[in-house]
Image (cartoon, rainbow over all chains, first blue to last red; front, side, top):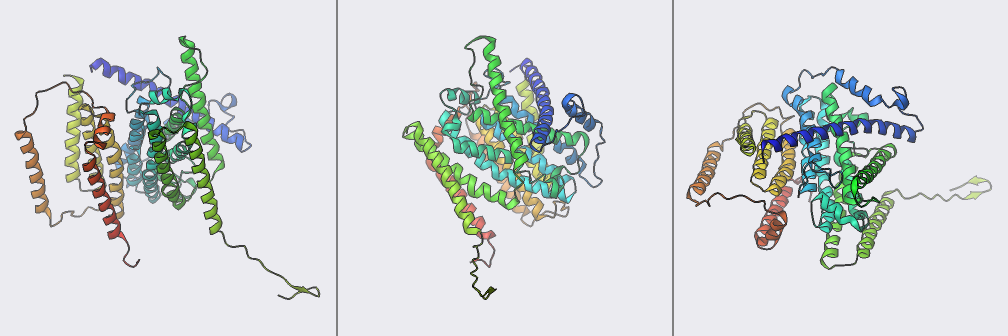
Length: 372
Length: 164
């Protein structure tokens, strides 16, 4: 490794930073438009044609806004917390491949690196919550910590199933191994677990309990404004995009799709398929936000520990049997679907047993009057 | 000076500074965050020593563990702003234990015959996994049972008295 390598690394990370910022700006616009459609509104329309300049206007507003620090806040931690959240959200992109050739540094431990580094941002959220000297921020931070620690387990164990089938942690290899069949077919349980736990990891609705605008008025970020707040905001959207991209890479075949065999047309089509699939996943995330209300904290915890984690372990054991005894592919598909159906059935049985018994009242009517 | 050496110096200074901060900080939250800094710097040293897998395990496990420590600090000390004395009467005992550990480490460094410097090559995590689950399977299992026992012990202690 020479200083030239270091310079190249800094330059490419800078380029990616620019790209991610652009994506984040566009995502905020896309989210508002899409949710507007779902709610029979137009979304932003005033700034530029179709409101296209709205994200730019928002960015300028945030940059020029006063950066307030509460009087009794712990100034150092308050100042550094947004960085601790922001840096992991950017660093993970170092090893995420966009096509076969577009990646800064493909790591042998790719997916493990991404998930391990992603988990670090929670330290920043806790710092933000504690240093703000605000009880809402504190509550939000504690909720965020509990939530992220709980959902990291099913997330990792779900990814393990895919990794076992692909035989590698390298994201390039995982995509290359999906040349016959996407892993969403072989690992439907892992797909659902990863998507759900991923939403919880990045704190999207219905898992945005730490922010919970309507009860915690914004959670750990309540006291932040201007630049510092926008760093939290950018980190959240960058992480949402990361979850969509990882879902694409792990389960939807990455950049695989109809493409010419050679030449620049291949690269263009790879990028096209990759971005199309990632955008589709993003739209599903927005759709969920517009449709499903926020969970309660106890529901959140019991979902993670009583439903997702056992399912993840069942999937892991199932995949191990499938690989070890060389069972045919259809067997694991059937087993997975059976597992999912059993889960849904169990949910309904439990729910019915909890509902109050319907009260039957027998009315005896004699001569037009109710007697008992 | 090569970049690797520069990175090594930065990371080592951060690890030591983090360790000192953990011991010297008057505030529990600061102490746990210093511990996080120290542990992450050690992960950086693992990367420099060509064991990225160990480094990532360090980040994943200790990242989560520190969060738990901060949570405990917050729950046990009223928002963590406990500024009174944190000393306990067991201070001499702790000093003895610390010095003993230091002695063992120094003795290990002095007594061992270190192999001449070789070009390090990364240990593939596949090889690591294979060795861990075949050659070292028994120590691995013993360690996990030990952790399980500790976990159950903690639950038994924390369980409310009145529940049967």
